Image (cartoon, rainbow, N blue to C red; front, side, top):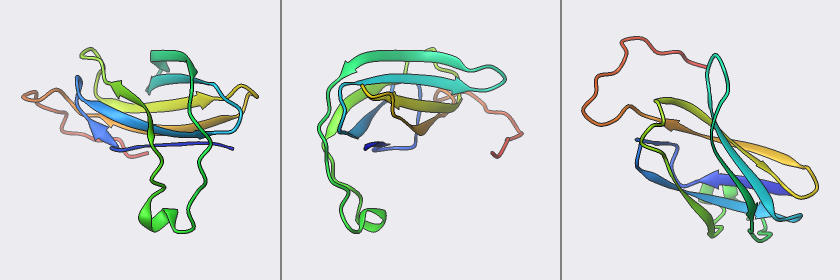
Length: 116
């Protein structure tokens, strides 16, 4: 099993989020990419160690309570948008999660939104 979640779903450039990982076949490879017209990889990391953690019976209601495996800081150059978090374990299994990057504080946003 390979699974992950973050402690927040949206943040601004320069802010951080915790990535919680459970993996049976570690270590993992991490790729974070902005999804748009083209996939733009902004971060890759190799050999991320994380333990195997059980999924509690009411995880949908109470959360998993796994320890943070990694803290990621969004780069100041990360543009606003949807960012795919791709984890790959040593056996080749993959899982996805996401974060949304909001515009830098003090900037004006677009008057249109694309809902996926």
